[in-house]
Length: 372
Image 1 (cartoon, rainbow, N blue to C red):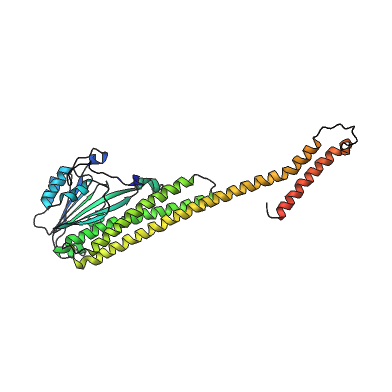
Image 2: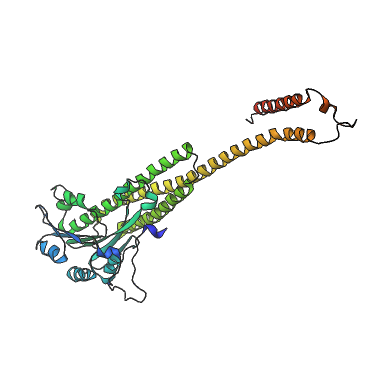
């Protein structure tokens, strides 16, 4: 079940908060950093960088909001420098570095740290087999006073729509109070992650519809494995999304100073989306169980049809075998106790006609009884 989640963890005995280099393929991905500074009433200034030094240099001093989005795997040395620059807790940085964290919210003195689960199905597959291609990626957020740091180890530009919105003067991120602007941005980023699950869940719904058609239209028996994989993926996705819903509930009820009461309606809206995702996943998970029962019932019905046909064939041939067996006994034809019809001129065709009439009569009888 955990094959859908890429997990990295420190070696046993490693000091808590230590950023240890991992020798895995993901750590070789190129890093892209989107650096953005925002002033009240002024357009955003955005730069794209490939190193941390370039990204930090692109930030405009004196701006009311700084946002750094890291796309790819961030080296441990860069994470340590970010911790020093923005006063981030080492344990939170360790959770960013070690992927596969459970969705959670950790409050610290000067900020809140959030991890989110992002379900992804590669676009190249066309959602053809989502049950075997689903992966769950981690998105991490630091929301502090005047800054937001976001981390996504995936290779697609997840928050491009948010950056486009920030160029609009009417967006809450640009119009809100400077003290709550970072939290507005955090809401927008979390909303993108939560809403991304709708596309994945919709892909599972389409796959279920196709499987239902295949079950009723084809006579193949190799769909049990496909349905089981789909059910297992939905189970993994459901557990992860329920944990994410619990995290958002904690975000909504937290009394941390970085969470402003006027922003709670936005958190409730995110929670509403998260609950809808969980409800859809649960309904599709139940549908896979019903689909599996339907498949097994249809397979049993087809087996019963086959057994009925074979039983009818055996029943028809039983009296024929009896007649052939009786007349196949090679006794002395001169004996007065022998069957007299063996000496008849038309005895053989009479017996064949009797056998044919018996078959026809049995078939008519079965037909009237509804057995055929």
